[in-house]
Length: 259
Image (tube, rainbow, N blue to C red):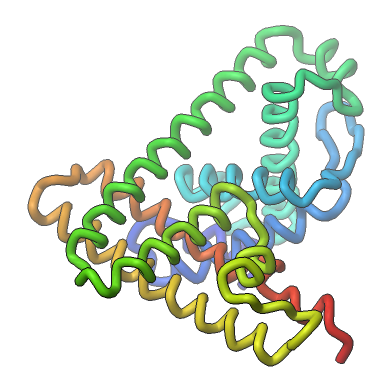
């Protein structure tokens, strides 16, 4: 799916929305590994730490899904890539300033070009993104509580384990390789075939849980315990969970083991 196509299929009720969300995360993950350019100052920089890349991809993916359709939806692939790259830059700068209070390349020029009002706006946008993510997590927790309450006792341990893994992958940026080694004893460098079997088994468990979460969301909406607004936000959060199977970390066996 091209950048233009995926941005055109992220609207609510689009039959290809889930496919587009997976493609979006893949594209953002690719873009964030290159050199990023701040448009106003033309200063370029790289996000070197994997955890920071994962975090900025999460934030931008959530924002794109929330705000779709974007103004560039349906335009050229080049325009779409540039727009998403700028979103990554803005998200990274806002988060970096907020958490570390450090100066990125070009910050001195940005202050002179934009003044203090823009800095205030960026801080407000960062706070809004934090609020949105917290809301998404709270709604996911509600759906999970519903799923767990309906599971037989003998299946609950597996459901809780899958839920913990999904949360770590999506919100804590724990690598898939770490989870497989810790929970399944699978190490690609030691036994590639065993690693792949464990990965596929965990993927299947995550898929079952995502389906159950969506069914719980539908049931809560139907019974009136979930508002339409919350149901929409929960749907967006569930789409983001597909990143669990789209992360490059899930293909670690291809990077660490000779052919």
